Length: 480
Image (cartoon, rainbow, N blue to C red; front, side):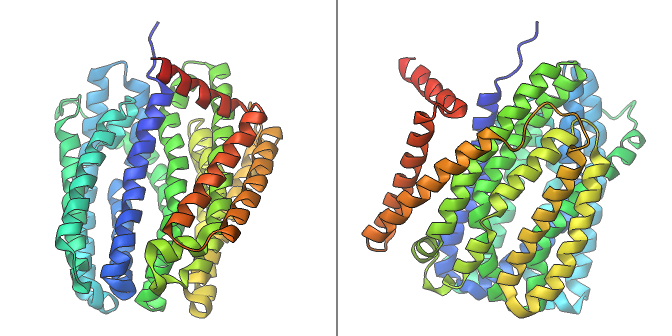
């Protein structure tokens, strides 16, 4: 009987990669906020959001689709190599096309002229995207390689930022460092692949129909994730883009930890369903629900309560106006966690891509309309409100789809109530701590520590399954 890789190990490695991919930008954001200022930081994030659209187009949904398909063929390395080669060649063509399109847009579209330099620098990531092969490693459940590459590239990038960025105009140097890191990460992955490229016997056409469905899903979802920064840059001042990104990226650190669950679970769920392992699918789904609540509820509440202290300590007084934006965005943590579970971990593995696509399309249109109404009047806060409402729409639409299916898990029940009550008591402890201590870095650290300790202690007393499993793992490590 074949032994499958440890999901716990895979998630820890993905968690580590997610922290590097989004915790690292938060660390650099705190540094850059005080060096380059809100206006130049806003220019960078506007260009970065625009380039993100073209990266999405270049990827054509392959990161999700490729991971699922390779997971199905991983027992046959020859078949997996052929599948990888087909997807690589498709990605090669789409990346070159996206690069040429963006470069021409940056040069000839008047509205982008003020940002053309930083856009052209960041557009080089589209060339790097040719060598983006994480989907192959995820498909065979090798998460150690991406984690190692992320650690090396992020560490070198951080060192270069501290050494080379010292005045406001150096945001262009930062953009160059981002590009170098992107290239280094992807090239290292490409040359450490367990497959050899094949050029004979390939059938690229068999993927196009399914890729386009997944791409449509990814496009509509990412539209309202990146549309806010682009529209803010076009309809408001660059400072509003910076204020919005400070708030969103703080929340996204936790969101990415939750999305990391999906990255680990999708290949395993696909394998279970293909193998007829319904009981294993049910157990894994229910555990994912619990882990989503376990992480999302206290994180959301903690960021909402501590937002003023986080902004003051981490980003400085220049970003004080992002406090309200950060609080508005806090519900995104639980909303994105649940929508990610329903779409990526449930509906996508069972082949319901069209239902997800429909929900995301409705949400994208809603987000565009809300941004047009709210951004001119409320700037960064308006973009935050639009994003939260959009994610709520997605969740409601997905719940409507799921309610018609006979799925073996409970989304709302005692488990969710337990985490909600523990979070409520945690908030009381954090508020008391914040009231008793003066503002500052030390006090913020103490409040966070008190909140975490209170939350975990309550769950331990309640004999929560996930909490007991965490303790069991820790005990095994200590004994070992």
